[in-house]
Amino acid sequence: MQLHLSTWPEVEAYLAKSKAILIPIGSTEQHGPNGLIGTDAICAEAIATGVGATAGALVGPTINVGNAQHHLGFAGTITLRPSTLMAVIGDYVFSLARHGFERFFFINGHGGNIATVGAAFAEIYAQASLRPGENPRPLRCALKNWWQTPGVQTLTKELFGDREGSHATPSEVSVTQHVHPEAIKRRNMGTPAPRARNFTDAADYRRLFPDGRIGSDPSLASPEHGARLVEAAVRDIAEDYRSFLARD
Ligand SMILES: [Zn+2]
Image (spheres, rainbow, N blue to C red):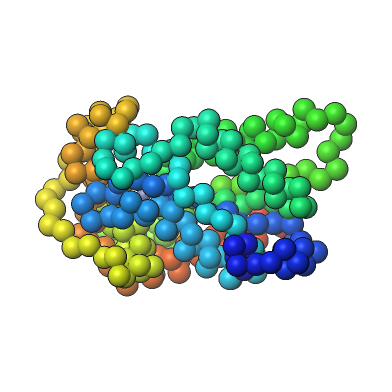
């Protein structure tokens, strides 16, 4: 069930049986020679949609721009600064909380969002703690990175080995090829630049990784691999979502 495709009476009826919502969060950033700019948002949304269908959960609108300052050296990238992303997450959560939502399960497609999402959760809890008196309906938030689930990790190792790399990976490109077969790009690419040290800003990143990849070989991507990765991620994350709710 998608929030965008629901009416307000349907959302009210959903709230009578569940106070939880899934929120996909991604990024809008370069993904190497054959990867789509929307990769991280596309992956998070496709997997959240699958988890929503499996677990009977409502899926909120994707936060499709994240923290991507270090990719701004490449055309098409858009970033929110960390403080903006924290404000966006807080406004999503408090808007939904006003209607009675209490459990917020974010499904993330971008490593660069992790620290900021954690800080946004800390800000949300601080706001709740600083209100006078006991909070009758405590909010709880969780973040799940789809590429780190056990099923996905096993499959990634089996399919791509050490050619998975860490940015513009064949896994995430495969997922986008499965979701958008009409947008598959074929590009020749050589060996990726080695990861010599950590990067700082956009200019530094582009100097270190001239074609945008970090250690990956996304020419190995295929829509078939993408279908298997989505299936593995949905299976694992639906389970995590159920345990998240069972903690009450
Ligand atoms: Zn990505």
